[in-house]
Image (cartoon, rainbow, N blue to C red; front, side, top):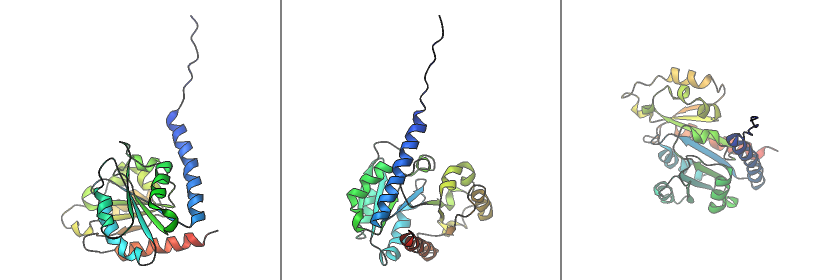
Length: 226
C-alpha cells in the first residue's frame, strides 16, 4: 500500500501570525485615537499592582489614565486600582496565560479608551506566554523583583528581549537577597542592548520618579510622531 502524503498544519505559527497582524491594526487604531497602550508583564508576586499604585499619582497628574487587569480569575487587582479613583476593568482569560490583541481590544472597549491618554495593561503573571503574544501595545514594560534572582534574563530570554523598559522592583530588599545587578544587566544586554533599566521600590518610592518620568516623556514623544 502506497504511503499517503500527510498534510501538516502549524497552528501555532498561524495563530501568532494572525495575532501579529491584528496587533499592528490595533496600534494604528490607538494612534488615530491618541491613546498610548502600555503592556506591563512580570511573574506573579513581582509587584505589578503595587508598582501601578506607586506610579499612578505622577501619571494621573499629567494624563487621563486607565488600567486593564488581566487574570485567569478574580477581580482583586481591579478593585484595588479602582479604589484610587482610576478607571479599571478586569479581564478574565478563561484559563489562558496571556492576553492577545483581540482580548486587548475588548478590554480597551470596556474601559472607554477613547477618553483616555494612557491605558496600562497588567498582563497575566507569567514570564513565558505573555512575551509570545503581541497585545497591540505601544511599549512593553517588564518588572523583575529582587527576590526572583538575577538569572531570570538568562532563563526567560524572550521576555527580556521583548522589553522596552525593565523595572527592578523591591530594591529595598537588596540587603536580604543575593542579587548581582551587574550579572542581571549583562543577561539583559545579551539580547536587548538599548532597554533602559530602572531600580525601583514600590514600597519606599525609590526610583518611581525616574520611571514615571521616562514613561511620561515616551507618551509625549509618541503623540508627536507622524
